[in-house]
Amino acid sequence: MWENLKATWRDGGMLTRLVWVNAAVFVVLMTLDVVDQLGGGVVSAVLPAEGARTLATSWRLEVLAKRPWSVLAHMFTHQGVWHVGMNMLLLFWMGRVYQGEVGSRRLLSTYLAGGLAGFAAYFFLTNGFKPLQTGTYALGASASVMAIFGAIATLRPELKFNLILFGPVSLKHLFWGYVVLDYFGLSRGVNAGGNVAHLGGALFGVLLVMQERKGINLVGWLEWILDALTSRSLSIPKRKRSRFKASTSNRWKAAEREASRAPMSDDEFNASRAERGERLDVILDKISKHGYDHLSPEEKRFLFDESQR
Image 1 (cartoon, rainbow, N blue to C red):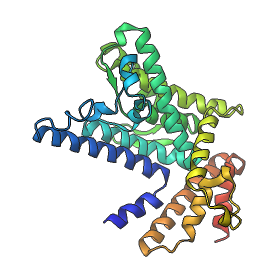
Image 2 (tube, rainbow, N blue to C red):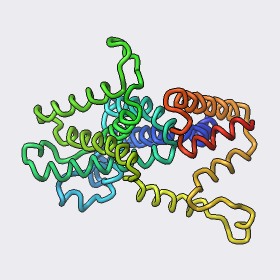
Image 3 (cartoon, rainbow, N blue to C red):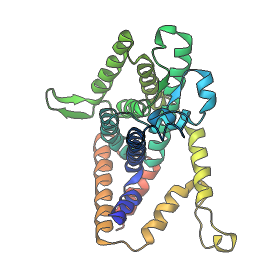
């Protein structure tokens, strides 16, 4: 079982890893809550706050100063099965299409930057408007997911999703329906801070694609940081470095090439082939709708590599 889990993590791609990280954090926090309840508060005696609140962020400066890590950690933290389940379903549905369009690197940077944009909207607007101060803490991947949702809805607005009660619905209408629900949610005041964060993430996703069309990369700074971190984690000793020609800015692809050279089991081979076939279908569909010139350099390279197999 452990080997299967490792293979899924290694071969599943960035979308699978994001879902797994969110699920793992949820399981750990829920386990701590169970231990705390059964142990009469043994966990609360050690941690500064119970369960998910340990990683939750806040609009209050005095709380935020004690847990600065929560600015990032909160976007991987959930409370309740419904909360994590709905976010992960939407992340999987929209992230799958988005990753096929822009690649794993942009999926991760959009997730992180969208979460930060949602936090910024939550922090500044909640501090600026007292009616929004209905709670102290905020957590969840909703802003990150809405950023991905907004980005793919702007990138592929006419893409259809078949809904059970409504039939085929275009992605843009589905997205703006979510936005309207969050907007109306502000009037109830129950989760006003969360609604603001959702709207902030959604707006960022839309702006990301709109600015990209003008040649402005809103997540370029974040992708530079991710590349730097990746190059450090994949650094090679100097005496061996001459054997490899992968550039620092391209370590993501270098890691994938190195992994592809390692012997694979039958299950790993089948999973890899299925993933390549799935991505190829997405690219071919993109060509049929928008033309070859609409492909990213990474997609063109992938298409060329597949044609040589």
